[in-house]
Image (cartoon, rainbow, N blue to C red):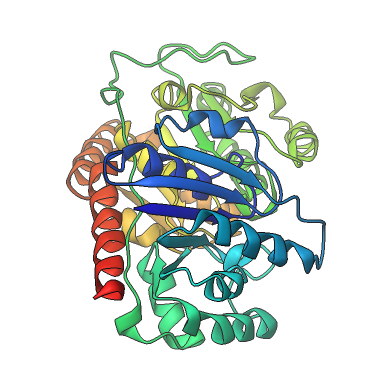
Length: 379
């Protein structure tokens, strides 16, 4: 079975990581793959180790580039895939050339709404989905929030939707108080320091500025002595890095902040934290929360997208409203005053991850969906 995966660009990101993991884990004797990027591919493709994969970049120009769909149609006619797997709105228009190329099965995955349409209310985007989704065999949202939105706002019939929550693989044991991974912080952390961190691209929708402002509020809440033992870690990089560094300087906390840049050892770095915080304005099913749960960390996160599917308040973490630094600071504060809260919730989060959100569970569901969809279509 040849599955063609259509993305806007193959580069660092949650959606792209899901596709890479899926390709690597699907049985190579049953599935071959083609990865099609509307724009380009990056070195991120080197993370794919499946023996039967081809890569294709269509070099789409910015804005409307109608010839790219002609190029996609020609490529699909050459490849003759059994299934086209499109990812997010940017790739949805690919269902038209797929239909014209007579691809037997088209599956469209929604990993999160467009960054310019966080609540999914943009009339143009809603109309585009309503026009094109009838050409899709199955729509795959990665969270209950996206499933409800597809049914209630977009109008996709419930029978056409198959929710598959993201999963990840972990190779490391959970973090413990006795084994905290050392971090190269600008201001050395003592053994009793409390390290708060997050993972993500530094750009507006991830709203790391919310976390920096909340950290400044937290320093006021705990007082000078305890505040000296707090550290904030932002694992990632992106276009807002200088802006975030300037914000930290303006709040007199630059010496307590470490921005790591892009790293290949995120799993290990997470095991250097005491608390994971996700301050985003919007999310699908964030892999970073799953990575934190796998690391045995409690999670404080904004109640957006599929986050509520992952974090159970008062059991594995805490949920707060988005874009509210004082509320985020108040949610973090109990983890500083109760020494048992973080390890107890972290252990519960690790257990929940192993029961419900492993990569093996996700891959099994996609394998069944691909196989059953093709079988149904060819009967």
